[in-house]
Image (tube, rainbow, N blue to C red; front, top):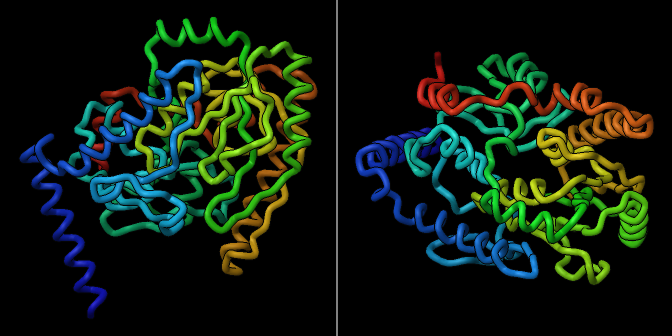
Length: 362
């Protein structure tokens, strides 16, 4: 009975919030608008300083101030723009609303937003919710089909999230910075998250990247640091360290889009979301042959089993990707391998996306 009353209270609270946002527009939810502006200030500070040092602190805006993410629960998110906390990861809700020309803080979206890559049928982000009458929004058609088959609810493929992001610098500033940096290599490695711990031989990774940069003629290396990585890394002095901040940063993907726009190529040792993002923006891929070890001992047995299945499938796909790269395969071949998971051909135009978000049942 208590759980049912709590659900009813939450439902009434969101209905009231949706009504107020629709009525008052930008004057509603001042705290959320303030949070968007605060994070925007962090991104502007990081991307306008010279020499370039786009490293955003991993802090969360909560109750009118920034708080260190390390002292908060793993999946804590103070944002109240949407019903589902993970909809705020990397600003996916903001990317969609902005692309569709909808209020950034408005009536909550009746969708579950899959905020990353899953390549195994058994993997999942969130289970269906009664309020999510639109079902799921995800990147690739294969994932959408799996969700429909598993849950019997709508699931729509909308393509790579990165294509809804916008660079933090205008075209002229991007071009000027490209000319200053020269040929640029972006490094994105496997990283830990929540209770999944990943480790690798960091000195070997650095040495391998140095060798690749020398052989391929890259004059600038940008090392993208995950917010949970150490702030002090034994990198060469002339490398640029970047960090897009905590996953709660609503402009996170705009930062990643900016990095990719500045880069000629991406190198990684992980079959992760960033690979498809680079291909979506026509960046060259390199594979770093340094294995990452995965420790799942902090997870429940059922969670660990699903994560092991996901890891095995990623390893299989990374083998196929490496074979294509060794064979100097065409860009079309790479896109064909990745397309089922990223849905490069499923990106929605603004009018189409606006209709989908406003009328999810059609």
